[in-house]
Length: 163
Image (cartoon, rainbow, N blue to C red; front, side, top):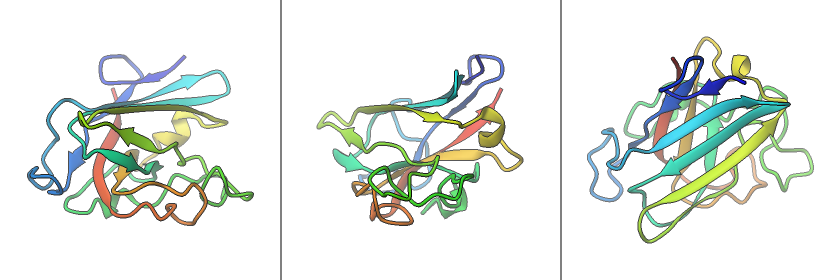
């Protein structure tokens, strides 16, 4: 089993940067130590995100194609990871693509966690030449509409890095 986390060999991890939406400095790492992992499991890759110091509410969360998170809007992370050419969203009959994740629900304490296994995904596909990023959006993902489920701007972004 290959794990993507900073502490382990053959791993990737990320920190999230944030736009100045809730008093945070643009592009600086968010307080509290966010952590996302990608772990190769039987039949796919398991992604987890433990978010802290985020704005309360429901937020779209996606794996993006480029391992780059330039502030202020994180558009350098590219589009959603979609090696199979599917449409966006688990509620879309022509979807989902591999970058689709469940919505991230952040409580009043600024914390939230999601986890999902993407069947058929591989670490080799995730950590290609230009890497990958985990992006959190301002609003909820409707789980259906291309390209990002009407989830709004990108408010946090982190790059997966092999170690």
